[in-house]
Every structure is written in structure tokens, then in C-alpha cells.
Amino acid sequence: MSDAMSPGGKKGSSKELNDMAKFITIVLFLAVIGITGYIYLNFESVNLISQEPVSVSTSTGNRFISGSRNSNDADTTTNFLFTEASTESVLGAAWTQGTVGYNDNALKIVNEAYKNSTYSEEKIAYQSANHGLSAEEYPSVPDQKWVHENVLAVLSSLRLPNPRKSNWYRAKPLTLLKSYYSPRADIIYTGIPKSGCTNWKFTLLKVEGMFDEAVPDPKVHYIINRLNMANTVYRRKYSRSFLSTKYTYTVIRNPWTRMASGYNDKFSSSRAVKWQKGKVAMQILKKYRDENIEIEDVLENGLRPTFLEFLYHLAYDKSDEINAHFRPQYQMLDLSNVLFDFIGSLEHAKEQSNEIFTHFKEVPDISVPGPYDSSSDPRTERSTLFAKDQFIKVPQQLIDLLYKKYKPDFMIYNYSNFTDPIFPFPKFHN
Image (cartoon, rainbow, N blue to C red; front, side):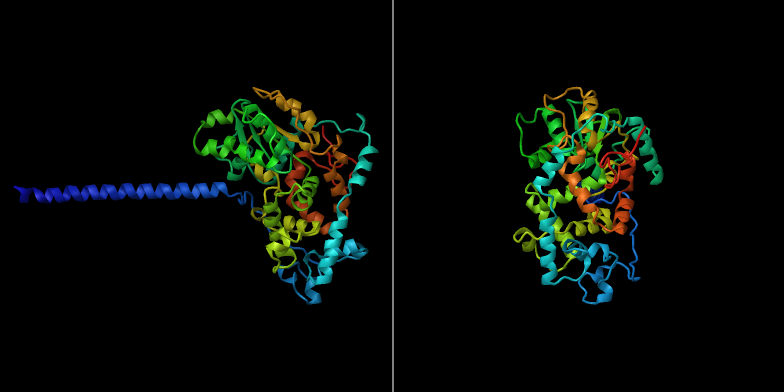
């Protein structure tokens, strides 16, 4: 009897093993997908929109090539930055040294020029005190109809579809990482680094009652992750239809002042986070000055990229190689999947904040988020004065490359150039 049943027993045992093997395979497969998704989501180096590499010919016909940075060959170290106008002074010469072979004397010149190039507190105070703000000269606040028309033009130029409503389940990982849903305010905010995001994060945390008194700026960026849309979407906490109906807003900034502010904050300000300065500074210095530079030169000896080297990094490196603090803003907005109800500008922060607050279900008892600078006029803020002073020394070819790469950011608000009298405001609007 037992012999007669043994084949059936073996068959049943074999079937159970097969079922178990299938189950284990499925579990492993899902685990791999989950781990891969988690890693992909938590790394910000996501190239949302491909950028074609741009090459520029020099006056001598030589191409800008990475191999020329440490070469002693005069023919290969010549590049389009070396113009008569840019080498009239020690500072000008130091600016042009960003991509050529370095020796001790050249390095000394660059460091001295860097120290002397920072805008002095006295000059800022003087310009702020002697530039009184009047209602007549203050540009009017752009209306959102005009802004949304510009967004449509951006989408058309990028050959991207215009969303009829937000689809957060299709939003890019970087957009989710920079977006936050506040249940008490019942709004979604997408924060762009160096565009006033710390103030807005602080506002949302106050609404949620996550702390009762001010905390250091860096800590705000950690606490706010409890509201992060990446958790909300990937954990299916809310349905698609629920999220698509929420009031969604963001705030952008004139790209020229954002670049200048980013450089100041991460490479010359006492507020800069040490690891951030070290990590990004090393990346730029190794690529655009000397590949043999060590981390001690940055963290201990205070070696910093020049503003020109920083701009080379923005113009030539791929977007996924650029830190989010300096990356084009439109790449964090994912305009083809997220329909923003309101796109504000940091230059009109105080006026536009009042309108945004009307859509908060609960409004915190705090002052309206505005500029970090003590100046009430964006034209006399430190980052604006620094941008006007420093960009005027940058060769036109590099300015053109930067404008091309950041063009969608300029288009959203038709932002003015650093040579315009109303810089950094929009040039015109309806």
C-alpha cells in the first residue's frame, strides 16, 4: 500500500517544491525591483531631459578639449577665453586661467583675484542706501495667465506634451524628491534650491506643527522629508485622483542671480555646508584646473573654484553631473506631468506669497516668505550686485552657452539679462 502511494507522494512533493521555487523567484524579483527603484529614487543625479554636448571653436581654431587643462603645449592651452579684453588686469587674467595649465605663480594669482573679487559689505550697504524703492519704478507683478502662456512655449520648445492635470505617478524622481504635500494646508509645493525654498519649507513645517520655534536652515531640509512626495506616491498613501486635484505651486528665480547666489553660498559664504563645498569644489577643480588636487586643499587649505571655473561646470557638464542647487530649474518641475496652479518668482515673493496663502486651508502665523537679503528691492540684494559685477567679466561665448542651457528657465518669466536696468526682474509682461 505504501509502495503504491509513494509515486503520488513524490509527485505531490515535487509539485510543492516547484510552487515554493516559483514563490521564491517572485519574491526575489519583486525585491530586486524594489531595491532598484529605491536607489533610483534616492539619487538626485537623474538626467530628466537630455542635453546635447556643445563645442565651441576658439579664435585659433582649437576646440575646447579636456586634455588641454594640464598641458604645457601653448597651442592646446589657448582657448576662446583668452581675449585682449579679459587679460587687461590681474583679475581678468586670473579669470581666464580657469582651464589652462597651472603653475604655482598662476595658482597664487587666481587665489588672490578670488579674494579680491567678492563684493564688499560697504559697497552693498552704499548701493542699497542710495537706491530708494518707489512704486513708479517697481515692476508690476506678472499675472499667472501670462506665466502659463510662457510655460506652454517652453513645453513646445522642448517638444513635450501639455498636461491637462497633474499625474504625480508619472512625475520624474527628482521632481518627487523636491515636492511636498502638506495635509493641513492641503497644498503641494515643489521647492527649487536657491530659489527661496528654505523659507517655504519652514512655512509648511509651521503649518504642520512639526516644531514650535526656529531651527537652523539645514535641519529644515531634513524635517521636511516627512512630507516628501516620493514617500506619498511610491507608498500609495494617496490616490492619483486625490493628488491631481491639489493646489500646486512653485517659485523660480532669475537664472543669472541664482547662479551667482549658488556660487556665493556654496563656495564663499560662511553659511556654506562643509561637505557640500568639499564635494562639489573637488569635482570642479579636478576637471577644470588640476586633476591632482586633493580634498585637503579644499577642506583645510580653503582652495575654491573661481567663478569662471564654476560657470564652465554649469555650461559644459551634463545635467546629471550638476548638483541640484545649480541645475536648470525646469528640470525639477517636470512640466509635462505636473500642472502647476501657480508659478511664482523670488523677485516678487512678498506680493505673490499673499495670493498663494489664499489657497492654504490653514495659514501659519508667520511673516510672509521673502528674500534672504535685508534689501527690500531685489535689484540691490547681494546676489544681484555680485551677478552684475561678475557676469560682466565673463566672455560672451560662455554667456551664450549658459543662456542656451538654461533657456527654459529664462522663458518662464522672460527674465532680464544682467545688463538690463531692471535686472533681475522680468523684462516685460502683459
